[in-house]
Length: 324
Image 1 (cartoon, rainbow, N blue to C red):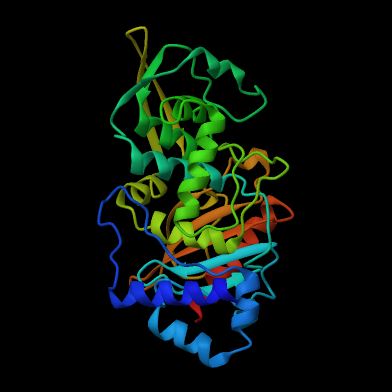
Image 2 (image 1 turned 90 degrees about the vertical axis):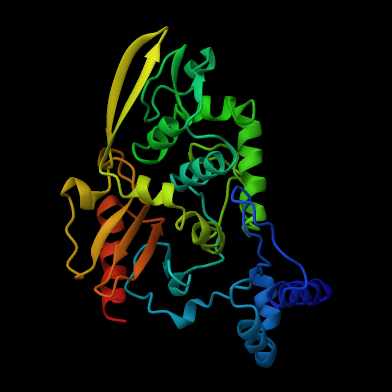
């Protein structure tokens, strides 16, 4: 209970301006999030919860699955919120742990974006060959020279795994250190129950996150102009060199709304998002959609039974948003 009381005091002091958060553009926003065990205690005192929501709405987020219409969403976990005020409009299994999957690449790319000069050129080392050849990859080779920006687009837009290696080498020194650094960074953003053992997103024992944590991260990530431009891109041309020899590769966003595999019937306009290539049978998707008033919503689903189930879950949520 002492832990809860301390958090309440910290949250209230932050709102009242007793202490200030860093204004540095490359620093994450710090929150005082509550875990599921905390909310169980807080829910026993309605007045306390009401006070928290009234005085520290931008700092403390309380997710209550029962408040949202999730019965028709088949995905194991789901989230939808407004980008303008970060209001959660749908949440399913907010505190249930799951393997983070492909969204991990977005977390890692945001970390690089916020800590590095994305226009800096980096050189691919020989450890690029260490990646499992069965993983979805661009197949860059030793001595390829490209920018951090290119690596970010390769990771998020194309879903490539091998681009994470030079990204990690030139940011943290190694893949393991990079995973640790990204974990620490998102923890400071409020993701208390997230552990990344790799930044490809491939399943690994001990790798975990929750919808609560995904929300705490995305609420900042998705208001970044560079990230929005990336997610709204249908394609990207990467120009690079190998030992001064020019080369190029073009990547396409595999989001089914962009590839023609899916057309929304909700009336909302799909602006962008990220999804693995359909051939990989993705079970996770992030979508940005805008209603007729200009409000943009972020929709994230994961743990779907199939790619078709994934698409159906997103469509169901967009339909619910259109009928709020």
